[in-house]
Image (cartoon, rainbow, N blue to C red; front, top):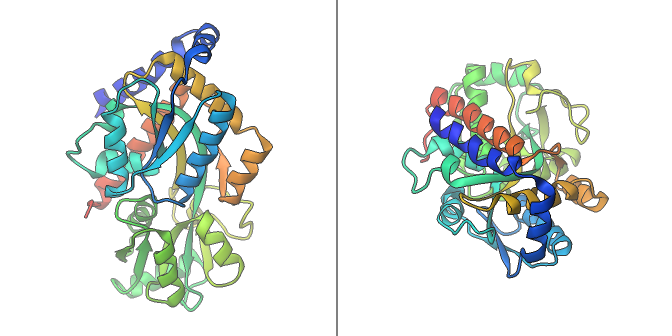
Amino acid sequence: MKSTRRRFLQLASSAALVPAAPYVARAQGGYPNHPVRIIVGQAAGSSSDITARLIGQWLSEKLNGQFIVEVRPGATGNIATDFVAHAPGDGYTLLLLNAQNTINATLYEKPSFDFQRDIVPVAGVDRVTLVMEVNPSFPAKTVAEFIAYAKANPGKVNMASAGIGGPQHAAGEMFKYLAGVDMVHVPYRGSTPAVTDLLGGQVQVMFDVTPTSVPQIKNGKLRALGVSTPTRIAALPDVPPIAETVKGYEASAWVGIGAPRGTPAEIVALLNKQITASLSDDTIKKRLGDLGADPLPPMSPADFAKFVSDDVARWAKVIKATGMKPG
């Protein structure tokens, strides 16, 4: 894994080492001269899909080209990743990256691609906090009370997720491991049906992303016990970090853009520049905020490669420690 990780960082660093100005000028003169596809591995209408369309619209306007979002869901994002991994590295096929990719890098032992070898990180976009939430009828109002109840009732607490191997599933498995509790994982096909059953009491807890959790919490239909980040978040200022009770707990979902191996460094640099610029735009920031997301700090392709590689390593530890399986 170390050699793969090293190669992953080298691929992205090669883009950063190229003098930006002359290459960007040349790329602007000829790229894009036909439509660029942004491939999304999540469902149409998901926060990933919406984010891809925001970035695609920005790039279309700024680069005077056509960036089209194409949804290819399935196999926890591996269908989309496989498609892009085997696409020509010419800048005309991009991948909407997220934490699913870094989890899958370890979760699946023999995929038809090598994520860290075949996908070049281009730019980070945003990060989304996860919220540990329960049905209001559940007899726990704090993380500590939840742990006490789960330990007293092993195997009787059902934990919902938006699907096997996703950030919500992995965040729940991390909690089980660090807190030493036994919960039954109940995977769904997306957040909406999972939240529906949580509201109905068929499942008791979920580690959900803020776009779907915050509205239900604010209207009193769900109770938040903790957030996955080390500090409190503006959307839920009264909800403490899970880490205050479970030492070392931290998890988040994030979104970025990647490209096939071999994509010209000048195109990677150009896309990075424009995507990074979009995150300072008030309209983009507001739209991301409406999705419960915060823009990631500005990162070069090399910086983003390290971010992605570190996330692969972090989830690899969780998967190996918990014995998570793809299903």
